Image 1 (cartoon, rainbow, N blue to C red):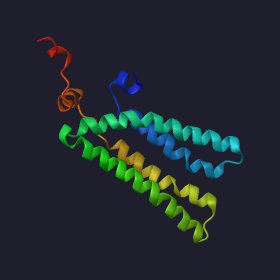
Image 2: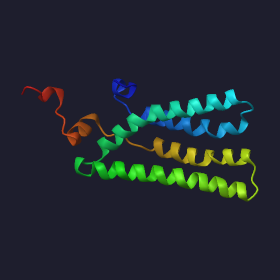
Image 3: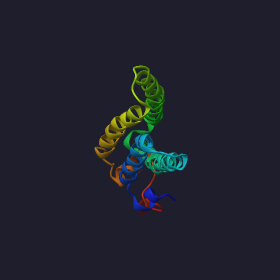
Image 4: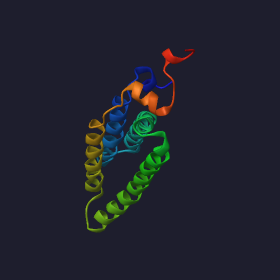
Length: 143
């Protein structure tokens, strides 16, 4: 059972995960040794681990079961688009003569946008999420 399951709140974990991952990445610009880069990459991966399951639970609870595949497909498509556009933009900036440090620092812009969007999330009520998923409430079991 995850921490989000125990607290019955997904949004704080999603916000914390996006904040940790999003702001660890640009800090690589200031790393002066490989252990520093390793620590920042570790923080990035911990952030991803914190946010992934609660985010998926929010997506599942926020849409009707009939379009859940579409919602997850859209999320995956946007994730892949970012994975293509980010490196292409970085290559363009490097080609225009920007320094590597400046390019890494530019990564704070999408991180900030992502964090603002995560802060704007509204968690569905637990009973509404249960109704959408088709799960019965504990009080209706055996009734």
